[in-house]
Every structure is written in C-alpha cells, then in structure tokens.
Image (tube, rainbow, N blue to C red; front, side, top):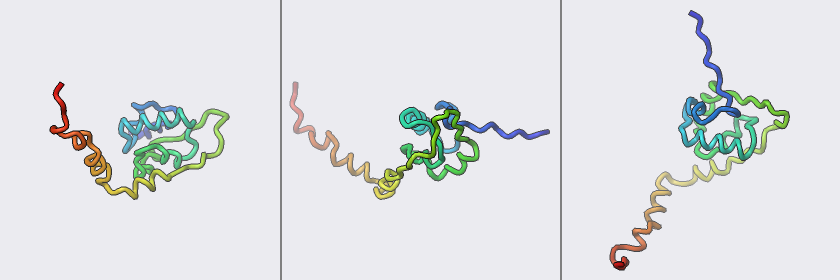
Length: 119
C-alpha cells in the first residue's frame, strides 16, 4: 500500500471548517484568522499568524507541517511588520486577572438587593 500525504491546508484560502482541522485551532480562532485575513490581507509569513488573538503559539510548528501559505495574488509583498506586543501584555497578566477584575466591577456588587427599588 502506498501512503499518500494529506494535502496541506492553505491558510490564505481556507474557510473556518478547514482551519479547525489544524492542530490547536478551535472554531473561535479559525474565525479570527479569517477576519484578520480579510482586514489585513493575505498572510505572507508564519509569524504574522501570531497577530491573531488567542493563536496557539506553541502549536505553530505543528501547524506549519500541515498547512501552507500560498499567495496567488500579485500584490503579495514582503512580510508585514509583525507586532507581538499583545503577547507580551498577556504574559504579564496573572492567570486570575480577568476574574478578579470582573468580581470587583460586577453590576450585582454595585447594586445589591438593598439598592433595588420596586416598580
């Protein structure tokens, strides 16, 4: 039997359903990749995927093995300047940052049952 390699998924033309077949890409991340591609243009370098919010950075090498970045347009230029500042901000926040923030600013905390007026 001859083993055939699975065809690589083109990140620049794949839809959400195809992108979710890649390792570490959930449905939400796939939507973000498609939206980023529509807003900023086709991906020309693998590092540009790091700009997508909640992209699984640790899975990039596995994704590279199963996907490709084919740029069929003539307007595809050199890679854009990749901004990874959001990754630095996410690393600096403690894991419970958002929970603690929402607990202190919850509308239920600000307007407890004693503050509620009957209609």
